[in-house]
Length: 171
Figure 1 (tube, rainbow, N blue to C red):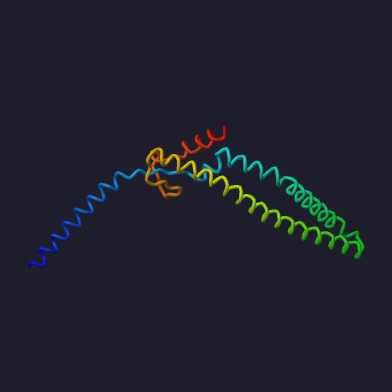
Figure 2 (figure 1 turned 60 degrees about the vertical axis):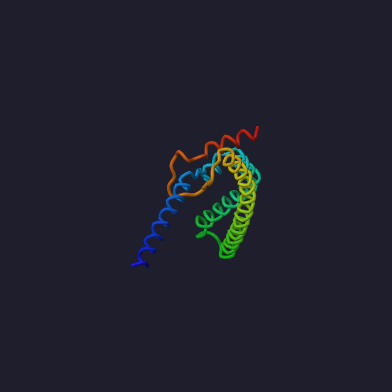
């Protein structure tokens, strides 16, 4: 009987303590930032994307020229295959295979280089974004800022504030 009494007292105390912790936790201020939107709309992210496009445009154009040349060669080969001699057809097929292989190699290198540069650029942007988020969190006395969530209420979304702060810091 005494044992049950102390068990009940322990449960009541645990419940009371958890209620106090819950009350304290309910004062917790939370913010949310939509990182995808930031990377799409923030001025530093837009500039980084334009830099990437400008830097990689010549290589992209070269890939497009190679693809067009391979397509021309393939169409020509299909159209003229009946009238070509075996040696000429073999020569064109080898040229097409060489061109296709070169295109695939250059395309793979292009993608790898682009991904590396994009990751570098976005890391720089994210460092800046995180610094702005931290400043906003401190100024608004937020206890926690989330960047991913299954659901979030619009009232805790500080994405617009982050975008404005980034734009203001660019001026």
